[in-house]
Structures are given as C-alpha cells and as structure tokens.
Length: 124
Image 1: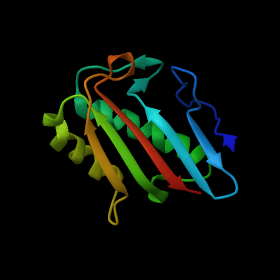
Image 2: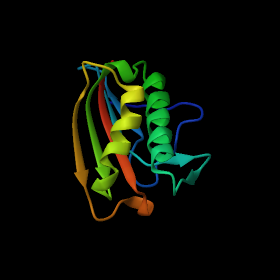
Image 3: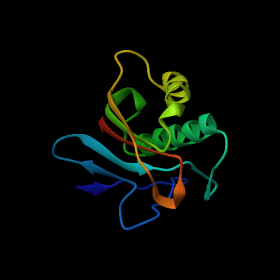
Image 4: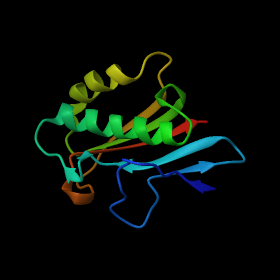
C-alpha cells in the first residue's frame, strides 16, 4: 500500500491518508472528502460544496495516476436527503455513463459539521 501525496491536495483532518493506492491490485481508495477549499470548510451553497469535493477528488486521483473516468464506486454521506437532486445535478457534470456504482446515505453528523462527504474507489 502506498499513500497518495501531491502538491495542492486537501490535507486530512484526522488520522488517515487522503488516499492510498493498492500497488498489487491497481486500485486507488480515496478517504471521505469534505468540501474544503483553500484550507477552509465551505458552508452554504450545497452544489458548490459538492463541486469542491469532486474537484478535490479529481486532483487526488490524478496525483495517483488515475482519474474520475476510472472510478468504480462512490459513497456519499449527506446530512439532508432533500439535497439529493442537487447532488445528482452536480454529480452528472463529473460522471457520464456507465456511471460508477454509488450509495447515498443520510447521516446525522459529519466531521467538522460538514453537510456532505464523498469517498471513492478507482482503478489505476
């Protein structure tokens, strides 16, 4: 296992790697990403929060030699399921068919009191 590192990537807010690469199997596992831009947690505009997360995920995947087009599984943790359609609207700007497998789970609370967190698994 190898930690994914690179210039300008979001930093973990706890004891975990932003992403790790399975060198023997050719997969990249992204930890849950919060809407952090320029070191600050975004609040307010939900669609912008999702865009920031997906842009950060894109950068992390590229640093690992992968990309959004190689994502096979996405898990979204959301504090308010009424935002599901907004999530889908932004999500469809970043992913095209065949879409990755995905789960969206409503939770009561996320780290840093974020509104949304997204994790991914991608092929190398």
